[in-house]
Image (cartoon, rainbow, N blue to C red; front, side):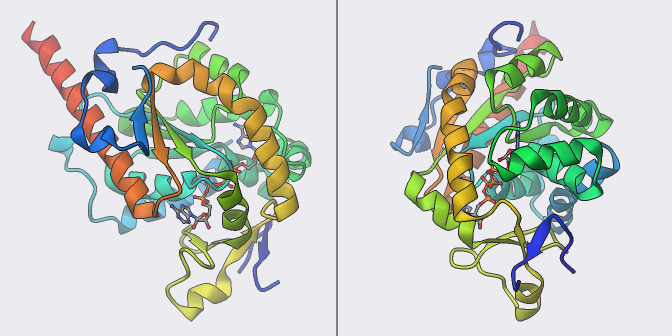
Length: 295
Ligand code: AP5
């Protein structure tokens, strides 16, 4: 059954610094990373449960979660960014399946608030319908509260769609949350509208589909797919405008830990590149830990 807000388809106080410079990917080049599509640059609570459901369901399905011996002692702290429909949610499902990180998606947190009809949700919806950023006074504490929960600290986190402005990045830094890696998915604008309009969601499993690029496996799934209220051509153009106005200011705050990935490639190829960067990062974290232990 389709649940609102979806429409049934048949109807820093200072610039963030890398917490440990020795983790910089730039210092550990990987031959697979030499393609132009992949380059290193220099160097709320019931609502939250609903918002994180799709991620947990993906985790349950996974048989590929890293063994505990393969994990770094310090959990991974990852940010993923990109234009609307660049594939952030899709990649987060693949990443959490393997790395068992807590997926925190600002958009999902907001939609959960909208769904329960809270005061914040009502206010947020006004902005989301216009493709604008929801004010910091709503978003910042929502994300901070989720990051502060014990599972995020224990397993590590994958922050999706936050920060989207320098003020959000600065606030996160001030709360003491420092990412290890900032993944930027780059996709040409003309592809994005097509992806948004064709996107469908499975309210049962939380999986993201596309009518053309990632169609549902069965007719039963197809019949229950839903569409997001902001997934129209008109609204995605507004969302893109907002993204373009803000992206540079966020990028400039994470340039020393940014990895850029060509998000127009097939999703499996995109994931392979992200996977490689994450493996490198884990290796670096382990090496750094061993170095510390040895001295
Ligand atoms: P949010 O929910 O974050 O939306 P978004 O940024 O516009 O991103 P999307 O969720 O639309 O796309 P995605 O990149 O996850 O792509 P997906 O994997 O689904 O935010 C919504 C609104 O909330 C914002 O407009 C704003 O109002 C508010 N908001 C959110 N965060 C905020 C913040 N920090 N501050 C203030 N306000 C905030 O993929 C899209 C489609 O493409 C799918 O159909 C998928 O199957 C397909 N696809 C994915 N990858 C591929 C591939 N490689 N090849 C072919 N098809 C692919």
